[in-house]
Length: 128
Image 1 (cartoon, rainbow, N blue to C red):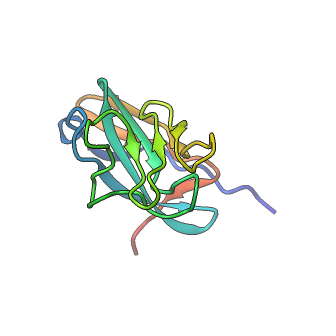
Image 2: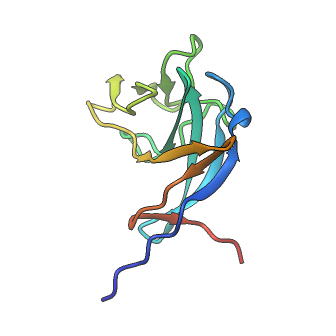
C-alpha cells in the first residue's frame, strides 16, 4: 500500500492573529482519515498548536470557541474534567490526564504568517 504523501506547510493565519496568551485560532485537520479540530495559540512569544483532544477523554477542550487557557492564563485547561497542560509542551501537569500529553502540530512563522506542518498522520482537511 503506498504511503500518503505529506502536504507542504499550510498557511494558518497572520502572526498578529495569535495574541500573547489570547484567543486561539482553530483549524481542521484529518488525523488517521477522520476529521479533527486543532488549535494554535501564542504563549511566551511562541506559537504552538495541538489537536483539540484531551489526553484524558478524546473530547474538545475549549471553554468557549478559541478559549483554552485557565483563568490565570498560565495553563491549557480542558473544560470537561479540568485536565491541565503546560502550553509550550502539551504535557499534562495536573488532573485526570495521568501524565499524558496533547498531540502537537508543528508550526513555523515567517514573513508575518503562521504555517502548520502536516505529517503522514495529520493531513490538511481540504474543502470540496
